[in-house]
Image 1 (tube, rainbow, N blue to C red):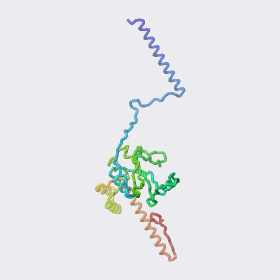
Image 2 (cartoon, rainbow, N blue to C red):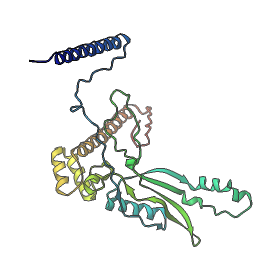
Image 3 (cartoon, rainbow, N blue to C red):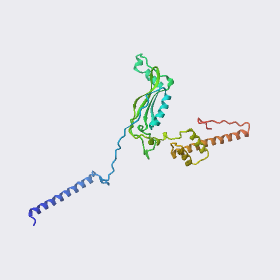
Image 4 (cartoon, rainbow, N blue to C red):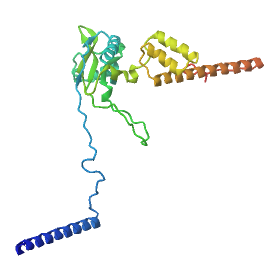
Length: 285
């Protein structure tokens, strides 16, 4: 038989529960009236999606040769370097020799009368700054309706500066301020996906493709032909080749039609005169 004290404790506990429930209802009612009620999520804490932070990679690439005889030698070397190390680089800054000489003439040393080594103007370019394409923010050309869905921008630290420097009374291209490190994956498979690394490398294959285009060969046949010869192309690249060839062919047909009309006009009367203007591309305007 329960004791009177036990019944009294149970009654007090029920009264406390009822009082707490009434306080919660009163608090929720006041929140709704004041507009401060927190919205309830339709997802539970266990089902709520979480943003995963990708771990940054640090890929070190081989350094370039520091000195080169001329800009032509440097450009030739750079193309081979990018191909063998599977990198796509962009030039973000160029300084001409004229601008460099202008800055040297206005320098404090020149104003004090000291001898300053001016760069020969015939060299044209004094400095070029190269970065990885993953360190360049893309230009937004859209209207804002559907923003860019993909960007390769990763704040890649790769950077190097090629500039003219006087060595033993001879101007040479010297590489300085270089950081040969990327924060993204660098490999031959990734390199092949870039548009700048794709195309037809062999001149013989280019001639064969032009012959196939002139013969109205199917795009799939052209694509298979290039793959058999280990050319790095996609179906979209072949589509672009066909479209470009058709455009050039249309220009030729238009020029022939214009020439035929002018010939008939001049033959109709000896007093008829005609002139034809050509655009910079060599097409009749």
